Image (cartoon, rainbow, N blue to C red; front, side):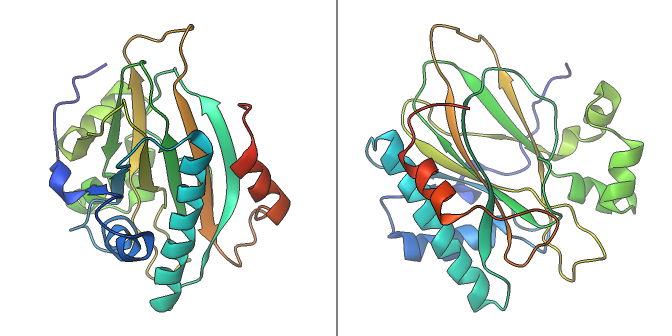
Length: 238
């Protein structure tokens, strides 16, 4: 694996505190940072929780944030966000740079629970790399597959290590979109990867995951009220 040392974005540009603002005041700032249509925004953000909410409280906060995020979108003439994926899992496997399988315009909201398993999260701005090469992002990724070392190396100048504390709950928002001519003003997403330095089978690294799409998207089904309520209340893992 090549060394991931570049930091395209300083933490002051993407790190927020849940205690500094109410959710409805925090959401517009997060929307501006994450749901970008220009490359002068990060495309991701971290919300650090001020206290130590329980897992269920963390998930409720995530869904409140999703609702507030959707209100901002509607205020800008965009569709509201709806969940197409809900999950809880113990993630202790290093991944490659990727975007999660989802509609072209999609958003990830990840609730990290406190853990003793040390890890790193990186994002790579393939949209910015493609622009600098004079290519579409689809063409750039086809020619430089980041699942392989050579492709990852082509992204090295566009990588940010996402800094956040691992001993308190945090919420990470990632623009998971892939720009396409089929969607006017399609948001510009980023790729992400996790590096787990020392997996620990005796511990857990729990991530609560909500995958969002625009209301009206027909390529997949939105989750029902019952499924959302189950996500809020469940204690088991996928």
